[in-house]
Length: 468
Ligand SMILES: [Zn+2]
Image (cartoon, rainbow, N blue to C red; front, side):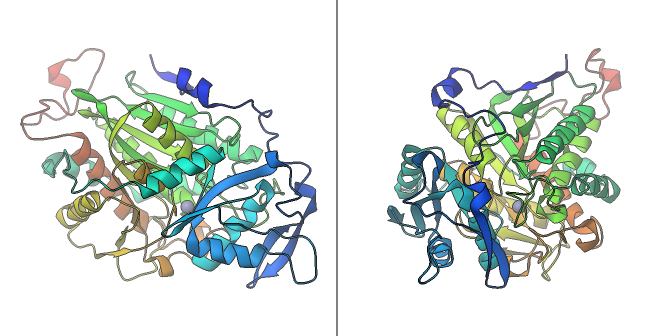
């Protein structure tokens, strides 16, 4: 039977969850009304009129943040000379390019605005549930890296990749981007952010119709955010304990969304374009009855824009429960081509062997594409919580970072401002299809039947394709 329920974390979650504030009321009502707006570097950024010392402990959050962002935020959030208010940021710990600090929850929006305005990043910091979890992140960063890594998969499925990648539809991609950007916003804390999560869930449920083995679930993030992540799982046939993750974030934001449920934040490129890629690969894989050897999970992460809440929660849960994730692909901003290159691989805070594998996928299956590499700093998107926990992650991006979409985090991140509709996103959908097939299926000898039609009958005459 088709499964559509909430992700069951089991006992582990019960242990981890502190006493919950009531769902939907986690914003500190005492702080929101006193948020004021000041012009910083030409962009409006909310400046909380409360300093750290005066903020109740419950309303302070621990974050780890790139040192460059920390320096900028410390400068721009500081109280104006001779005036009260503002936030004094303190570095409680520092390791190389990452700083541990804390700030009022109400200042998270301002921090996000600074990350975007000064660094053109989407994320840039990780919000932690407690000081202990923030310190655990610092410990992970200090841990020596295991190297070199040997990938458990190889490029050896040209027929299957050709079948799926060859059917990528720009119209389908554009349809998903258009629908998601039609929500007033997908801000994690607002009702429209929950409605958009439900929309994604329902779309994926529809794509999985006829596949009783495929599940679509909400992953509830408890007090972190009222927005749920959405996870679609295709169970592995012969290696079910090995998991491949393809993800992107579902939320959108712009300055002012924190206090305005009706803020206009279409987020067409950031990151409806990533969710559209996931939906298109799901559509193609299930339309062809793909039966991967490894378990494949598609994840529409909640609340990326406010500190990677969704992906951090999921990666932490997977790490705590010993799940064997063998590869993670992040899709965040695929629709705007600002550089001469077609696909640009994020080269920092990612797995170098998996990056080389993704580069090979591009040169093998889309040889006409021009590719390069770029840097995006600490925690710039949802690949980061996986990477810091020792999982292999790669992040192909739309442009070099300094040439990526100038419209994100604004009301102008619209379908009209994508590059030629979904033409750019289609390159990423073909890459994601190749990634799915080549990481989840190994070798010519197995499986005998990667495509299977008619699951109820298992009638071999109904196989749409028989692999040699
Ligand atoms: Zn993004």
